[in-house]
Image (cartoon, rainbow, N blue to C red; front, side, top):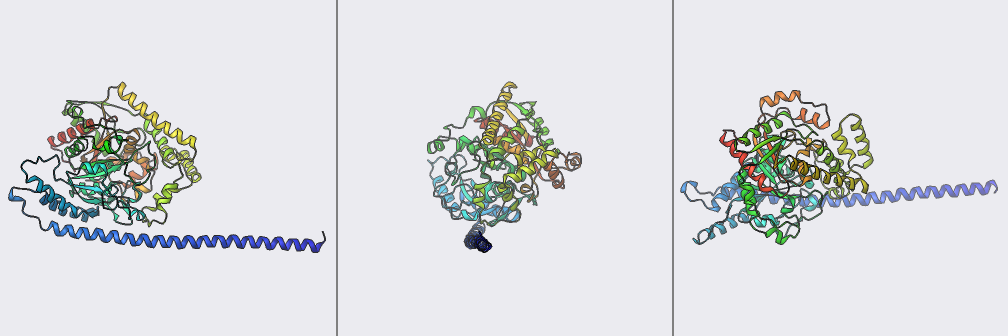
Length: 575
């Protein structure tokens, strides 16, 4: 080949290379432009939907104000369902002004209350339990004809055609409002770009919890007698703890989630379940008694266990209860440990036997299993749901955490492990796309169930008493900036599928504030964050958690009621 031919060939290859580069750049530019146009189109569409939803909320709140102003005097000696409904319109609006908890007032509730009043005029009509009681409902739960957005703009056009089966069973009550949730319902704070951020009734700088945050806020602020939330990893119990009320997570298979519009991560290993919140556990027991008064739920959903309310478990004279103040994974703050010790004394006065109990390393092993299952797809489903979603600054860390590439999580995880922060390392090293790792995670959860049941049987333990959470209500932004290992005091019982309830028994005191100085904040990222960010918490609610093996829900309800009654009889005041 002569020099002229070689030069010609070189020019051809150079031109071809340049053409390829131009083609690639052009193709990338084309896709970028198309992506931008599509993204802009979606964002504009979502922005329009958000404006409609916000206008609908504002209009429904204004309507409720007008109806509340028409309340008759309650001194007449005769209270109707309509009168009670108007009172709670006013109380809900007051709670909303404090906490931003509402997403909608339900106008048909007034007609529903009037219909019940009409039935009550018939002397042959026997009023059922909870007749005419107003019921607030978490926005994520299906209510026929009302938005079910899960805090996402792309879900604003999702309008269920029927109530959830739990709502249908509680229709002797009157659903009168919907309450706020965090975007995707996958965090324990409460903020979205549609309805804004909800806060703790006792301190607007602290979160009300999540994902049933709006329910915790409205019940804790006195705007609702009873509420219905849902719980996948503490989503009922954490808001109840932060907001100063009571909450109950039933055994998952005694309820139905057949109507949930899309797949929930981690099921069937960890199942979403609906459950009540209230100021008083007596009301929670009544709601569950009504919900399980027959087999309506299981007749509609064959995956739900056909099991009625067990009065024998609820009326048992006494139980043997194991208790602990730490799960040996992350130590709670001093005040959160103190209230467990106080609850031990209160339950002893009600005739129960209280004995120390240890979970050994069960929570640590279970956490590793849960985190291996939680984001097995690398966050692909969550990323798809969050695509083009308008996110507030507080919610961006959640998106990054749920969609971060495995290699980056592994790198950060090994860094945490080298620092001796085992809990953070578990959170970061757990997720994997490997089928072997996912199966190992499932095995760890099942092994935890087996070990716990065997230990409780060996020590003849009926129930457990423990902290509800590691700390009192936290600043709004903190949940999305620290590992979710902080949730394990609640999440562990979802993994075990044990029914669990929380009862607010005390408040954070000046002594708790002083004792905080000696808390070992250098053990890990979670401990350091809660020690630093939970200062100045005097007056915030504190609760304890009661837990029993699967299908022993009535035992939990009984002990919750006993604890509440003992607290009242002893002169203690619930927050």
